[in-house]
Image (cartoon, rainbow, N blue to C red; front, side):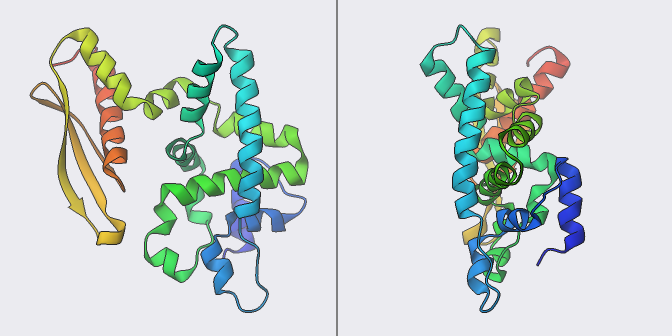
Length: 234
């Protein structure tokens, strides 16, 4: 169970003080914990997540509409999808260390739920929903602007790292990109995959994740940063 001190710590991180702190507690509570409680049962985050998802879609759509007046509907839809997908929200949540505040049941905790992108992204949306109910759309928008719609250039590179790397390598005509699984660890239900990415014969990055796709994405992002820093490719 999360302490009041930890709740206030999270408020300080996100820069918003709740009038009704119970909304924040609900936003952090996974169904596995709620279901374990026999008395004083707490509501979980799922209803707030539903609301936060809608608020996030509206705010991000408005942002794209105003920021890119010449982009067509299909282009904006694709951009929005990459900005608010599961991996993207989990990436943004890392800025405030949101995972450490999630209230999980014992079973979910034991199987690695605290580091599962699907849960972290759900809680990110639930917090948005909680802020919206507690303070209104402007406070929710401020939160989204600060933690999701900021530094979009670098975030967009991360979200689309595999395709960005492919384009960089193709334009330089230096060989093919290939990914190589170089290790697995952990129990069957909670594996960590490790992947390396090569450009030609040179290893350019490594990444780890709970899916092979996530590991490849992180390896590609590392390769992009290395290529940008050296201003060249092998």
